[in-house]
Image (cartoon, rainbow over all chains, first blue to last red; front, side, top):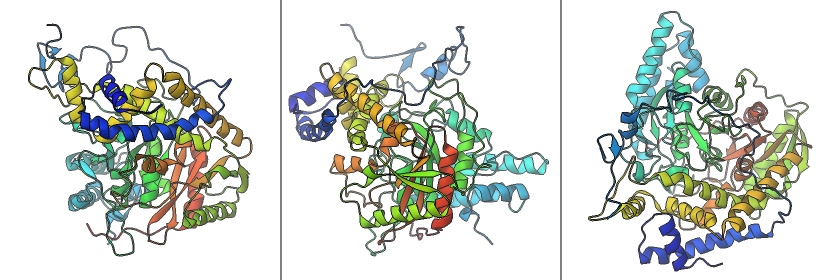
Length: 100
Length: 494
């Protein structure tokens, strides 16, 4: 299925990337070309093949079910979490008004 | 007197231990080289104070008669994908401008615990997306190598770990960290005449490493030779409870286990890697590599990896899909750039921030990922690619019935000139044709320099191993290294 300018505009909106009409017009043939190249995957017979996400056998671990099981990734580090925020106030991230 | 910056990791470590020179002299030598090499644009941030502090600690430990740590006195370069506490990290993207990690990645923490010091943060392709280092928001890294035709065209150092490869080849650091998602350690190593190893997926913790495609991302070591790679990787690897995919296994003593004797080993030559339009020099080097491994005692067998040609298109679904999800975190709220147009709401702020912060290649991949994961396309693209990934992994499993290791070229060409491929994304993607399949299967693989092409540029050979067999990979790499006798280096012009 061809990637049109309308498709690009929709994808960009889903990806939360602002693009102009000119950019969409430039990107559409690029993505169409890449997706056309990717289409060859359709040739592969994958009947009865299971998709894999993890190729090296590993078991899932659970950490201890207690607060702050790992001091480094646990709680109590609000200031460190907020240290890089473009804007923060009163111990919170701040964003523009969401509800009118 | 020997120029200390000509020494590798093992030689520096041994010299500092023996008291032949001080760790401070070594650090000062590399710091001077870094400050003289601005033309290469290999470093994004220089941290001489970190390298000197580690050096002084090594010298003090020696003076006090303590046993020195495995990397005591060795200053290294750190790819900017690794977060190091208190030092700005951007992954070469504007969207992370101003971000200073308040924590330390596990890989870097392991290296500091082993006594290493940091010369600085290395330039790279933006978010590790690229094969030429041209997608960095902070300018291209220029390879120290030049073609022998006298044209002086600036060449690509490879990517995405292009700052790492250029810095090592130019003697700005004896070793560096890299990360490899589809070839980002091995291809730049091949382009610059150095060695680089990507271990089995899960050997090195991903914690604190800026994510690109989490099922593929794996940290590894880059250095001038195989021994140095083994020493570095041993320090970097290890189980980390903070990474759910970290392997809970002891780190083998790869350095102590090195041996270039390959008697009893079977090395497979995958026939599907003889791609169309492969330059005759690469063919010849591959044959030379086969002869070298035979000479080291290995038996050569032909094997088939029938789904090889589908690896790249599968990768260009899986990696962008994961990237589109991972990079959703850059929203202008929690860290990095915020672009808030006058009167804009939250959604507009997200879109404006991401438009301003991400480079073109990153946007391209986020959009491909968003597309292949979107309703109605998910099964046709993402599920199909994940099934093809199963078949690619199965190809390797079947090959292991016939052989212990695989030998292939690392890249289909020598380094190309900057700008030569940047207009055609698919031509750029094809550079990873030999490295992507083993990434999809999570296998350990390394590149070692094999020789020079007609233009005087380095070419690499790749060894791929079974899961967890880094030792086998390193040993075969050593056997090649011992026979290739690669001593060429880029003449300093910078």
